[in-house]
Image 1 (cartoon, rainbow, N blue to C red):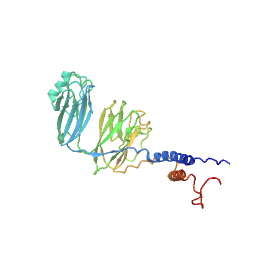
Image 2 (tube, rainbow, N blue to C red):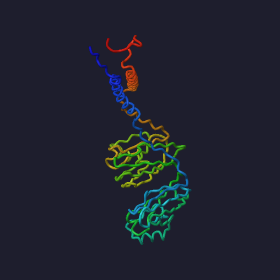
Image 3 (cartoon, one colour):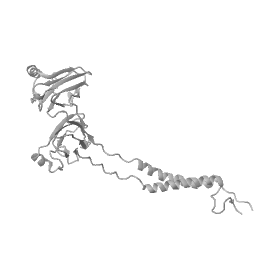
Image 4 (cartoon, one colour):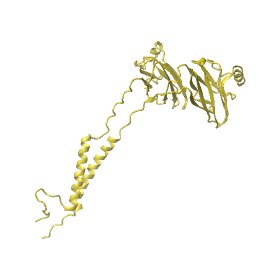
Length: 343
């Protein structure tokens, strides 16, 4: 009788290699899911302001100053770095008269006459594409005052090129950064301050990343929860610590300056109708730990112990496949050295 033909060793090993590959396809996605979990959202942290500070103001052909709101502390020097991003001359001219809002219906001659009569804290002209500096000395007598700054180039002020310098009594304090978006969110929506003493001065630079206008309105009481239905009546009874209007347009910014009297958690919202109801609010943690973000739901297909088991089966399958490729069959228990084949 003709002896049956046996399949080669690699053919006998093929099913086990296929099994090993199958186990690998199950195990690898699980491992990838475990190692690629979403990251937690960021928290804005305060940093101390130096008494003598430097700010950058961009001058554009819109025409606009960006930002159009500056803050300085008494008994300090504020250095304003001016960067002309446009194709026209602009000036940075700061009124010397506190608390006066200049009339945009004035002619260029009337505006120039006001400064000729009253003087200026700074008056710097910047050519297209050039940079310059204005140093403004702020003594104790101007604490709490606000000074308007304009461009004296004809009709630029009338077209909207103006801003305000606000002077605080409380010294440098701390600074935070916040942004607003057209998705009606504050980013980040958690800010944190560690104050060495109270009261503490805080300056928040709020920058608009979208096209809609917003407000940054901070509740006066800590540990009080506002809602879209009660915030109007609440602010009537308890005026906010600050309510800064964030101008519309990407890149627009405003300083929200306020003083904290005590630690706690303070809520801030956008008062533009419909924005708070859409989720535009955040929390300011003052000398209070920021809660850890909730653990994200696991994206793993199976638990870790199942992954370990799959890995073990994969190793066994590969080892058996290698043995089969060299011996032609899998060794039987109790027949060491025996040969396979038909009798």
